[in-house]
Length: 485
Image (cartoon, rainbow, N blue to C red; front, side, top):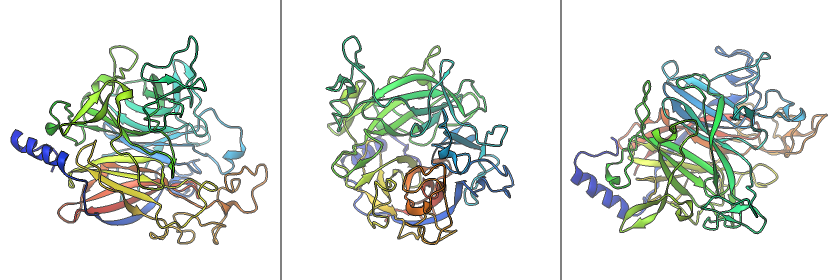
């Protein structure tokens, strides 16, 4: 069932009811399953010499893995990628992110893992994503990563980290929706973190329409924002500000040359929000065809959710008018988030949360931390209360080696991993005597919406998602069955 109903009257009635309804009062029934180590040392998409599709790939470790459909392919954007176990000891590269992809007609079954393919160099090392401004490659080294991505069915788009601060002062004005702060950096005084510096986010696209190269992007717009620093995005089929009851939140039609649909982007003002800070969630939308622009540069003229008036969502072209769709977040630590429309639930599902690595997270077995779940009938809500979907201890993720998803503190009998990186400290040139001081944590959650399907019961769904594990430095693939009570 899609969100689009049969008659205007029924649409309007359902929409009004959804706006007035409270968040879901009952938690979903959930069941989780570990599928495989998706990317990393010894994985099918990694250094495994027995891999039947890309053996001995030089991809020792990586994280993130934000996915989107690009025509008939699944694309996954990975973060800081190590092509060998001592990568942290080598001179830092200009760019170190990577991208894997697969043709959906050849691999449609995530239950047997996914056969991602990485472009490689002469040494069989995974080639980095290159982000260019004109002819100049931009620095995309450590902690500069892809954040989200989407497709207009012609080109793939990436949303990439830029400069962390935007300077201002005499003769150097901030964008009109920002202000010059006390430290001569642009800030958003309307953000839930008003003193924090706004930062650059590059909107870049692959250079050739219909091309197969998804590791090379050219910047077409630089977005300066204090509200969409940590973001996730989805393209939906139809979106109408003036008639939201007619919105169709299913994925746009994929086909040769088609450019359709609406981009939805949800953002937070920081990568990590902990107790005592804000993790407010903001929303914007933008027509997907309008991103191409009449000439070289992409048009970036988003409309921001600015609240409700008489139960109807209102929108503004001014970032300063944006208000959160979720504020006063309840959970203690928020990292990445991922949102997808799940047709068999007739709801958006958000997975979010996670933990910072040691020494920022000192308790490896906190029963209240992990991956959280919320649902909503519309991108602006009303969002349900958070529900803990996955907890490392409850799911047996510290269950020993070699089968444990996360390595426990002080090793716990696990073999040496990431040998030059104990507790985030660089031990080069000699390996650390105890590399497993730095225990595994979950972060970088991503819903692979391409594979979402109805569950085994009415009002249920099976979703596939991946998380990063830090130690070992890998990405793992999971699935969950969600059932409305």
